[in-house]
Image (tube, rainbow, N blue to C red; front, side):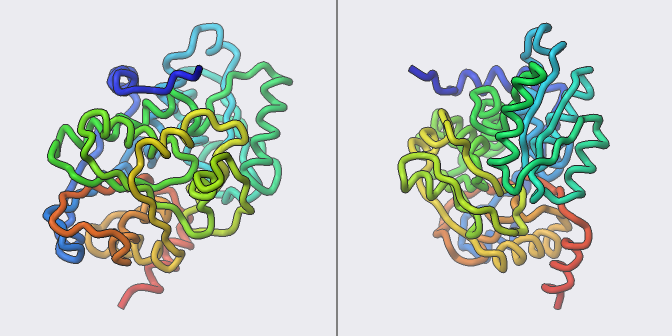
Length: 326
């Protein structure tokens, strides 16, 4: 029987990762509050997190708790970018060798960021699933220790610390909206939030071009989808062929699912810049996108949106701003 991560694991993670993370701000968006009719709408700024994304929480919790023998062996992961950067960052500060497997679809700027933090980058295949296959080969060939992006109790517990921070500031939150891809973030936040307050309404937001978790939930098992270009490139990738944790946890803890389009993501990114002077990547904008598109009823509710990261190609970001500027 598989032991699922629990609230106690999240509290332990909060202690373990304290030296590696920032406790990011939770700010109010009066503009989104007004547009949605919510009683309050809070933005959790993981876009200001160390390495520019929430992923450092899970990576820290996994790597900092490795045995001395495993630290000597070195670590390996596969990623669409942000997790690879987090693993490189934590490993570099901890004196541990790191290898990151990326697919050819991962933008070059993400690969360069990972290299700049000292990790070895291995580019292989046309999708994250193919990069994952190379990752398994390298585990066998080099004896490296796996640090998976999402389907791991330590990773999930680390991401769940976001819920602790949000509820510490606003224990009266009624709705939490979280971007969804492989599910490590959503399952950690949903489990922690529901364990503290079972009445919290937890919403996952997926991208129209890669709703792999939703399709897997419908099928009752992991499915593979063709990866298509999306501004929310950090939300690309599968959920793993042998998913043990996140699929079940999301089915158990998440109340509602929303899917947003590329145009809606662009509007979310521009809104964050225009109204709050925030630079966020496409994957971080999906919650704002869902609110702006009236895809969720928040009337009279106090809601919190997690803005997950700020890693985006400069040219693409400027294109989005120019397109939506009046």
